[in-house]
Image 1 (cartoon, rainbow, N blue to C red):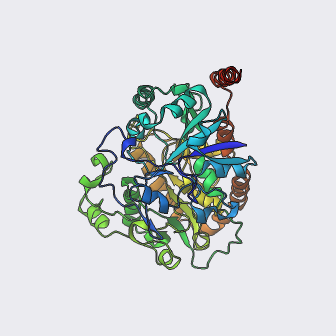
Image 2 (image 1 turned 180 degrees about the vertical axis):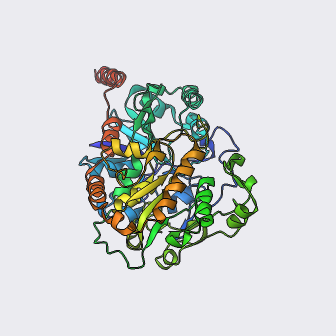
Image 3 (image 1 turned 60 degrees about the vertical axis):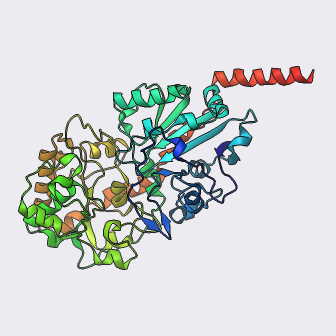
Length: 474
């Protein structure tokens, strides 16, 4: 039995609450954080922290927090994807939801955690105020009774030396021993690094997206397009790729979306980074966005900035019509990397839910992402398509050269008269990937590490408490 402690266990969705006192910087998080999306009246505008809310009323109505007993097959509807108890139960471990205040009065082990989501450029590692934890909780963490877990596996912070030092200093300033803290990361880059805290790899996006898989019987439509390329949030590489397809007069072979939002001028890009030539034609193309798919809206997908986001499973949904209406999926990944040494995003090496979608839909794919994404998939046992087209782009570090190789590849594929036959020849590869996707359980290593309570400090503390009780009884 694994105990999970929450501040509020009376609510149907037990959760922990993040209030203003839980931030070191009073100006962080900004009061002007933009609204991300609204689902059934739920505003996630301030919800960068799953299981946390900036006020209790939001937490009361938030669906994206841990359910006490979510049925396995209702995960897409329950917004339970960030719930660690869910993954423990799915893998056969019994869990017990307990009140934090109550379990601190015992000598039982427990897990206390929060999940960080949607934190692009948010420096949580230095802004979360661990001094807001009670003395009792800090003592339980340091003794080994409590496993403090920060689930950063969805977006995954780039742990540079500076980030590591700041997080470690933040913990120590709160009298928390760093080696008693576990951070879950979706980046396999740190698998062999020794850090002051425990950094545990979890392929979160693979775990979650696989929950949405259905073994569809896919019949390609007669008018299926050659390429599918979906772009929800504005990024330089996404604009450049779609613009190159437009400039080469092959967008008629695409089902695509591109929503630039307010990012329509060169100065609008983050840090002014647009590594390719910017001219009036590019700007006019950006100004004409959003480019949308009619079927996306007909099937219940949100409009404008919410394209391709199914309200019952944002980000992770696998619409059957994507596989029926398209032959090859061009994935625009979360991270592309504009420079070495990748100052902002780092090298995560693990792909996001965007790449798992074509695998779940049994579709061949090309990845517009950071280098070595395909190599990482092969390390996990998946197959890619180097026997059918050139995948050398995956090994190119320079972002301009990598993008050029991808653009040249897609243009060459667009001219192939045997395109449908080529895609049909991928059947064995996509079937292998689909079966492996269903079989793998990337969360198992995370479960083993998070549920490990072997601290000698805690054993000694428990023995000391027992001696104290015996003394009182005598």
